[in-house]
Length: 465
Ligand SMILES: Cc1ncc(COP(=O)(O)O)c(C=O)c1O
Image (cartoon, rainbow, N blue to C red; front, side, top):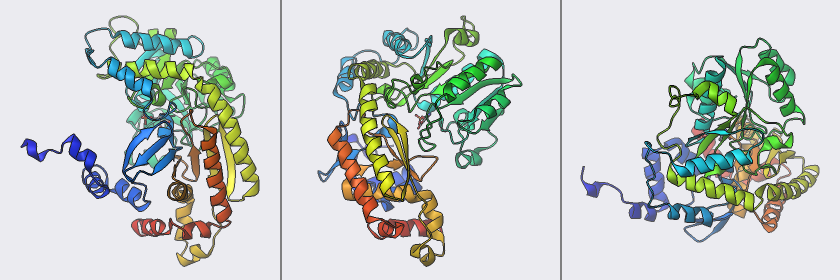
């Protein structure tokens, strides 16, 4: 291999859209490349700051996708960048030592999380946080079974996938982890029935389901789950990977009901949107049963877990989250946005439901009525829009209004609004106005499908046929 055959950083930074598509398609994922190209989403973005990104033609876009909840502080928060610079000369990895920054971040997480959560494991992603939590639950209880919720999303590695309640993601990979059983979300009777035989290690649940379509449980659900878990000796795992660090108007969504889990999973915004970090934090008594003593202390580890760059980013991101009172910001701005959207829901039939808490908001659209397009395409449009209607609205927002959004992974008919928590009220208004224009212009689905997204829709139809 000659050095000249390798593509250098500067060259890749200069690439135009076509080269990016070609290389991405060939070397990473042709299907995804096609999908993004057809939707014309694959702009060449060259700069990002706060709530905005800019493409190579100088156009500014408002980011209401927010890195799926990883950008609570916005893009490239200056203090996190400065922290990385500050530790640039330190060893990033030296596993045969104790990293002071890891110990400091673990201390701070113990201070900000509720109750007596104290023992931290650091990994590198949300799914790794979940894997760690599942293993801890089994090792601490000596039980095998894990109960999870339908429509949940906990990640895509084998363990996390085994407790992710969507058939589409699970099916190609069976058999998954044995002993994982699903129950409906927000159903305490179903939970009690599963836990009653006293053989379940853990119940894992998102305090608000994110990828399931932003599903907020009834008040009392989390508290009820806590009581049932206590009754049958099952550990309670809250997955706060997406809801954590202020997103829902509380530092952690479980604070809405003042419920403390045995294990909490964290990731996304913990790394300030720059460095990946996944972590769990557990009650000391639970952790000790699994990993206490020198014999068992290395049963669960990760090469990059607790590296200096990640810990510097985490320390700074958490300090900024607290200092800027992002939870309060999310609560206030979320209330404003939700109220405006609910008004809109009353006006437009197409907007079936608006739900959420803080700045984790889902817009669910009505399945478009069978119409002319449906007849023209022999029913295919209806089949397609069932899955991709949210995507069409996201397309209009992107192309006409330069607002980036996306549908939720488990429920493509729900668009999420999940901007950085530092978003300005004018920016919220911009999104509200754009949605109003779109809904006004598309009394029927036809209007929207016939505007800019028609070509893409046609191509997807051909692609899937
Ligand atoms: C609640 C929840 N848990 C876990 C994950 C997985 O995180 P990652 O994609 O970092 O593995 C996600 C990702 O969206 C999530 O929303």
